[in-house]
Structures are given as structure tokens and as C-alpha cells.
Image (cartoon, rainbow, N blue to C red; front, side):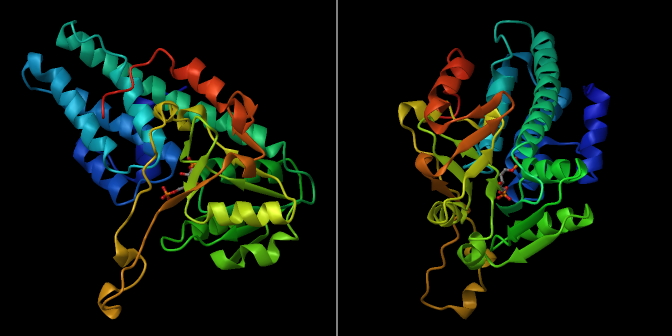
Length: 325
Ligand code: RUB
């Protein structure tokens, strides 16, 4: 369990920074120095902690400014619902008719609570997912999911001999981070370009990927390329599991709201000036339909895509979720 000081130490350990303004955190999320759905969630909550600690404005403006800050953070990365849910968790913790000091305390303690929850739910997800991995298995993963990396290292630490196939994940190459992390933990890794996934899929036993958003009807939003990997897995009769703490489940999708696919700068794909007259597309995520997902590993166990709606109703049914729309 983190207390406030432990949380600050953990953040310094992760990012080498003593963040002193929420804007710094927002910039680092937008530039992807802080990335991955769990960290985006934890760190956006952390940014509200900084806001509340530093707040010296008029007491009657606190709620408005808190909501404005949350809205700015919300817009830094539009696809991962972990970010929105983290902010909603904190916003829902305050009673706007109480004195400002009470509201400040509520924000500070709810951020610590969320930070702990995000950390412990990922521990549990990684532990449960490692049980899906058998001795001798070949696992395909894509991009860099902290939960997946931890599950793979957990399985290896339990003495299972595993090999991992890691697709690079153009254009930002987060798959290379995964490959380095696993190799550093002594796990044999084969890294390949994204388009090689199908060629080697016949050798694979299970696909494990992270999640940025799981919708009410059980769709999986994750790094661009995940859908093609899921199709390749189905083609070879291989199960795909996604590792998703339930704060990656989208309450807003119940009303049929679409999850936005983040479109990033074309310059991340190629030098724009070398391609006069060409429109360069750079979608950061795609969505995989529920029928291609065998199961969603959550902190409460494995949920099938058709049961996501129940989890969302139970978890978010009483929460106010309309702050940003
Ligand atoms: C990262 C990505 C990850 C999920 C889950 O995308 O798609 O699979 O965010 O990560 P990006 P985690 O690099 O664009 O943020 O398991 O760490 O929450």
C-alpha cells in the first residue's frame, strides 16, 4: 500500500522526475514519455493531486478549476479510458458543497486510493494471466503492456520455459521496449516487424495483449495492429487474451458512444517533406471485435466479452460520468 510519500517516491522512480505542476504531467502524457494505459491512468490522477496540493485560488473557484484541469488532462490522449476513469474516480470523490479544505483532502486521498488500486489491480491481473501460460509455451505479444510484461516475467520466474514473439509496433516501436525488458529478465524473445506476425503465428500457443479500452459490447481497443494479430490468431486457432484492469472498461460506451481513435502526428511515420502530395495516416489504436477475444483478464478473474456489460453496470452504475461531454 502506498501512502502519499510512497506514491511520490514511486513516481520519481518511474519517471526520474519530481513533478511540480500538473501541466508537466499533462505534457509528458501527451508526448508519450508517460504511456501505457495503466500509467496514463495513475499519472493523470497524480496530476490532480499536484493541482489540489498547489491550489491557492479562490475557494469558490476550486471545483470549476479542478474540472477544467481534469478536462485538459482528459484531452491529452483520447483513446485510453483508463485516463478518463482515473479522473472520474477523483472528481466523484468530492462533495462540491463542502468547504474547500475538505474537498482538497478528498482529492488528495482519492488520488492515493486510485494509485493503490491501479497498482494492486495490475498485480492481480499479471498473476492471473501468468497462470494461462504453460511450460514450454510460445506467446505472441504486441506493443508494450506493463501487465503483459509482468505476466510473462511472472511465468518465467515460476520456472516455466517460455519464448516470446514481440511485434515492434510501428511507428513508436513500443514492442522494442517489450523485447528489451523480457531479454533483460532472461526470457528468450524473437522480435519481428508487425507484418511478420501471421508468418510465425502457427508456432504460437497463446496471444497476450494489453488494453486501452474495453467497451460495453466487449470490443478491445489496443495498439494499432492488434486487430490484425487477432485475425492471424483466429486463422491459426490460437486464443487471444487481453489483460485489462476494470478501470479500462468504458462506462460511456454503454450509451453507444464511440471510443475515439487517437490520430497522431504524421511525422511519427515518415518525414512528411519526403512525401509531397501524400496523406500519411498515423492511427495509434484499433479495435478488435469481441468474437476475436477469448477472455479479458481482470483483477476479479477472467471475464468473457459478453459479460463486460455486467461488470460495467456493477462498477460504474452509480457514478457520475458526464464531466467531459
Ligand atoms: C500502449 C498500449 C498498451 C496498453 C496497455 O499504447 O497499447 O497495450 O496501453 O498497457 P501507448 P498497460 O504506447 O500508445 O500508450 O498494460 O501498461 O496498461
